[in-house]
Image (tube, rainbow, N blue to C red; front, side, top):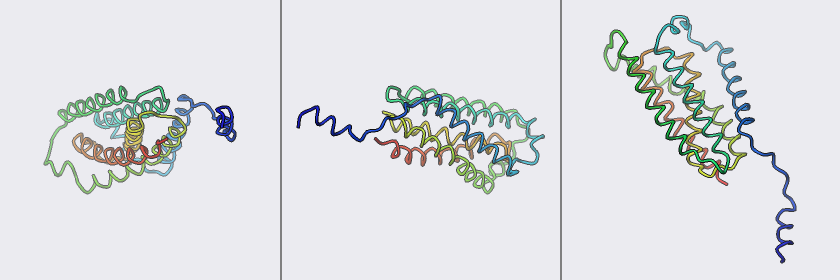
Length: 213
């Protein structure tokens, strides 16, 4: 078979594909995020003492930290869906960002009056409940990023899936901030790390398979 005939045979059933746009995907992801956040508030899941919590430095620390990690990770994931972009530089920046989160958390904790007992501060029973709630709240973001990046052509599927999973984990934690009953920096650092870690590990494993060409 001649080359021209072979090319024609292979391309006969091909259909035009809409070019991938990081901006368009970001808008779609923002819509999903707003809808989930609105549904969360509409279901009345916000903590009842929100007015008091907003005067706590730890409340603003955990909300700002999770928001920055979520937005940064999602940005790295969406940009790396293009075949000419690598997520490696973005992942290094995210590692430094997470380190800064823990450092600022230590500063917040150092200003906390009355440390109490370690086990009492960690509150294992409540921590486990908080963990699975963060995992559930991360699911819509994992699905949305998976669908959007699947339409692209990431060349580093492990790096891209890691960024997407981390962004989803942080977003789930960000939403949970509004319902989280604890403002103890130690509790937040431990249990938010556990919740985000679970989503990141499982999300990366699932998305890496989904992004395979």
